[in-house]
Length: 111
Length: 146
Image (tube, rainbow over all chains, first blue to last red; front, top):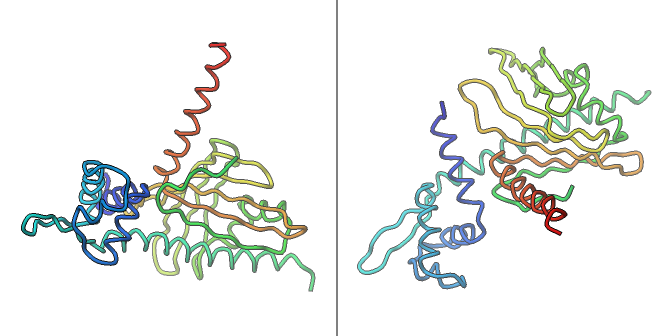
């Protein structure tokens, strides 16, 4: 049985695996943007950008809202926070294990 | 083996240890040694099983001071003593996370060892491997075509 956290993390990592999507998230991390503002720096078509936005939206990483005649995209921080928590948890775990291995190996040396 | 493209978040760590690669590799793979350093803080690691061969599995039982034992297990994909280990990593039980892939290189630094570790979600690593396999299959077909 796949629990909800796994499903979300899978979707988050899949969404982050593309450099265009990462760049979009960087941009939204600074401020909300319209779809055309997001498309502007990239040499790809608007439909291609929309495809990326759909992946990000399905992963719960961004929200899209119609405001008048444009769509405004905003970053949703919670999934990103969970993904980076995963990384930081493992980093802390391994740093402490390497400390322990270092101490263990010191025990080899004669006093 | 060249490192694949980075697909999604990857944990990278490096640490230099005052021991030879052979010594560090042994500490990493000998059950009697692993017991002595692998458990965090005041955990114990009462159960350490290691079948050190490609396709072989390992399983560690870890016990917190107050709590039930829980298990970590995985399968060895690459074993190149004393230079490299690649293995899967998954916590067993109801709070399981996704399987990850751990790659550890023990780099000889003249009597010392630089441990270079990479951990990533297995789905990401599979994507990299698929790309590599695709190339290998293509090259295999080439002699027949010529």
